[in-house]
Image (cartoon, rainbow, N blue to C red):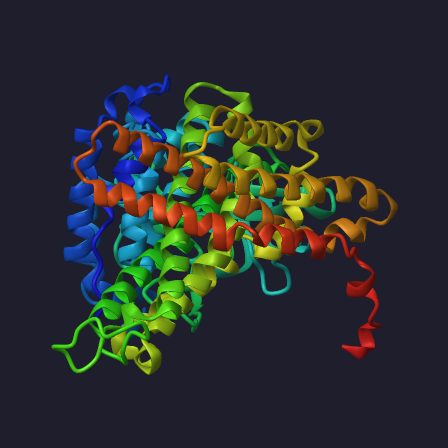
Length: 590
């Protein structure tokens, strides 16, 4: 059975030596000193390793069961959920006005990585609730907030998002779910939704569904979509639970992974719903939840690769296979451990350099969200809007790739279920698909986000990289700054190509969108690694005690710059071929 231990040391390094969180002028950050964040992360790591991770394989093996219209979660899930709730882990960054602890989103993200790495399927229950909470908090009326948020903060009531229908996924303008206005101001919701994560379960007293539907007579297409709060159990005026609403679970989907999470077909048969936000403006409200969810899914991508890497590393250090070609390293043993072989080291270094770079990227993204929300910083808001499809798309693509790499370290044992590596790969695979498939993320990045506000935010990112490189021009930083400069120039060249060739034929831009998303992901991780290298060098210069940690950080940074960042040249070459070869084949010949 695989093991998991939260990498709190590296988290603390990113929080305090790279981001310098407690020094930032953001409300609430002054309380985030190393002692406080260390204590929180250590406690989160304890519940993750001792309670949640042992249930990961249980959830995968047992799955969820639909019995008499109620979904039963795997053995131990309800008790663990109660422990999470009572420990306050579901309320970390929620509004104190509704019972939350009011910590920064950055702290929610750090803890979220730990919980997701330990048991991804389990963590989706509170994770989706947090997204629904955020949508109601941002768009709900005062009465709706008072009715729903206190119970959602504590996860006494959980939440979902209901978008997809059997005939439409990304193209939500095609939806058929209808909302009929009632005399009392409520609506009757009728339709079917599919792929509803945490759609039903036995761990909460109520489930608050956020459902997209079209009000009768609404405009056609996406402009006619509204968002509704549809509780599983209706709530009385005094806040007590009333009658069961007219909705039901049609079935639980049989999935490749995340078996411990109940992915449901939801049937709404004239269920009572309440308009959230403005009529026909449902996507505006839903995107509050979706953008948060996309960042959370990016976190899932690298969190799964973290736990997979931990176990692959342990296996490579323990498993005896062959001899080091440069000379036997352990003559007292029958063979040397796998770690002596260059290709195993390549594999592990790919994983290590990705996971640690991705962590810094995700934490930086959470920091931008705090700046945007707590400081009303429009620049930060624009930058995280630009980065959201990159965080979601790049980190989940590469995260899945790294779980496969970790599985490969095990050889044949990696293909055997009892070793656990298969589950990490199967669970990670969904992250590339849900909350907008990664091809859609790439289209969003190139088709919308690059041109947002006249290209202000992508130009601001280029300037950020340029400024960092200028400020760190020195011999000791050359191994990090020069590759970053080159990669950033590749990214800018791709942007110029889109502007020139895309004006002639939009397909020239869209054909290169996926490559551009990965190119931008590499540049972002390159920037993160350059920043981490700077922090590590500063620590060593100041007489840091744990020199091994910082030396390893610098070695890993050099590896990423030398072996991963040059991928931007390949992506640029692909982009500059345009759409001709991609669109040349007649549809009938595929």
